Image (spheres, rainbow, N blue to C red):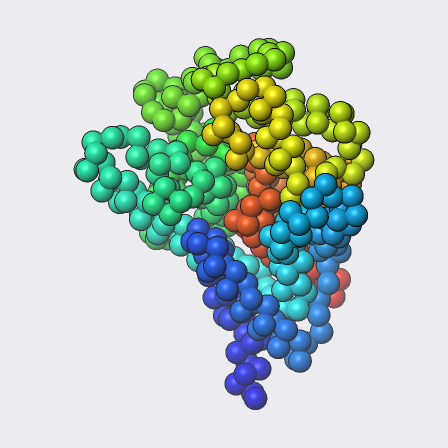
Length: 408
């Protein structure tokens, strides 16, 4: 019994399980689900030896899921909504894991993030080598960029960019600069540029600049800023996937036309900006026509309404699988204004906590999610939900302990 107690209350156990769960996000869904269930079982057993620890920050995911359940009352398709509730169950399970979990230290949190970051660096090598193999077969250089770079595991480049960005920021500002760490920073930096997510790259750069002033001495700041300026200059001058994607957005995006055109046709030249702007346009039209701003259509029911609008505007059927690609709008359309407010509350909690502890990790998570929620329905996908909630709950779990220590 003593050995069991030591095992399920050990900091090393939670370092292993939490870092493994974060790394497994990149694999097929079954791996992360299995590890989450194992983690839930271990934390439940651990309650025999300690009291549960609750943080009021966990009320937000519980409340969001509660609104989703309530949306069954007005859902336009109850069966779809029940499936949506099954997919979103992480909103309940992940906070419960952290409530049931023994007290964990900031050192444990940093160890979890360190091993997760090294895992991301290892995946970086895997993806680049996989792309190299494809290039040798096809001679196509596009395999080294954007979605093609992570296609070997059927992943979305933007979601992988978010994981990469936060690991990179952690290694830069919260870890000791060993040879392994420096190598991982280099790999993740190159990988982030190759993934070519404009939103994530710009936001990451902004976080880096803030982190420099937050963390380092004046001399280090000056040198680092010179490096950043040099890197940006190279990206502007020389051909590269990031420059190519920025130029495409600038040259091909006709925002006025997207907001006024009544028929687009099957071959309309969409960009990332214009397709998202179109989705925002039909969001307003849908909810206005159905008077659904207060309640939305019910969790996981907006897709058919989107397709109806896309058919009305004569879009190519390949876009029929696209959701709103905007977390704020996605929540608003399915669970109404209250759902939208819960998404905002997540960000408010992170920003508020940063004003209290000045921890660059809270600021980085806040800024990156603030930006990515504009371009992706991040929490409506298992990978995004698991990633965000694990970091959110982990950060607040350790903050609760620090608050108790400070009071003593």
